[in-house]
Length: 339
Image 1 (tube, rainbow, N blue to C red):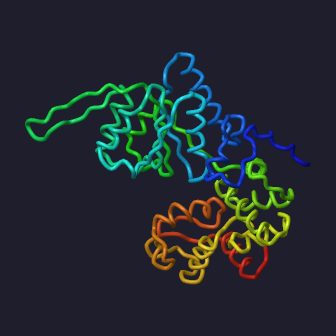
Image 2 (spheres, rainbow, N blue to C red):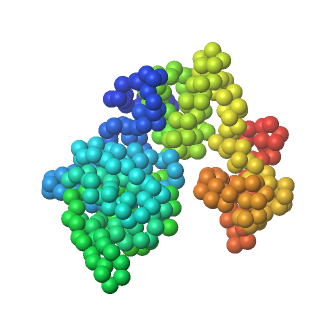
Image 3 (cartoon, rainbow, N blue to C red):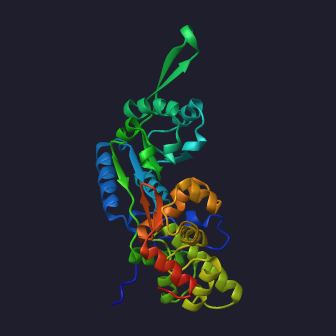
């Protein structure tokens, strides 16, 4: 049964002269944000209640794999409140003075968005606690016996933090997100299909429905990946002077090395190394890192999550091991067949 077409975006198509396609593809209103219905409803209630009271909403923590829409939700919160969003990241706040400069330059009702908040150092976290709890900034001036603390009152603001590794946040920091801690889930294929259709409309891309569905199928259930594949398929069709059909999309994905379930060359190499070098595993993470010439963080944060979601890889007390399902996929690819 065919699905109804998604709502027509309120944002008009933009020209190729736009400098930031990813930013332009972001929804500007809640109705355009596809997926994550539980989080959207909770945030809308939080914001509506705060607006009725004439207060800034309480602080919010968003976590989940990269590319699922954490930054987009932060932008929607700022748009809903009509405030300005100041954007930074954990690694960019190197010292207490950096955080103090950010907080003291906020205006009432502003949103402070900190991406990769798990990378804040503990000294900066200690300064952030009173700012989140009581709206004040405690600054220590001087050293030793002559040191003194100066308290600065901050304007009402809402901190929206995002992380891919929530376990790395300290318990005191996590507990101060009283507005809620929300985990973004992977999208369904149908939700990704709606996102791809919307993005194609905004980019002015004409493609067959089969091509859209193939993009959704290979998207790793992640909007950012889906939009990336859509743009690369568009580029391929443009250069080859062909309409963006299913056949053209398949050629583009073959060139990119993205297979029918969204695995990249690096994903397949990990599975192949486990089979060929370690008889399927288990193999330790540092050993795999050396064999693949990939750093451990890349394996843990980029390659493993999706392979485990598909059931191709498992973590054991002795290391990583490929599953029978993963072996079947590798053998099928080696034989040039789609399973």
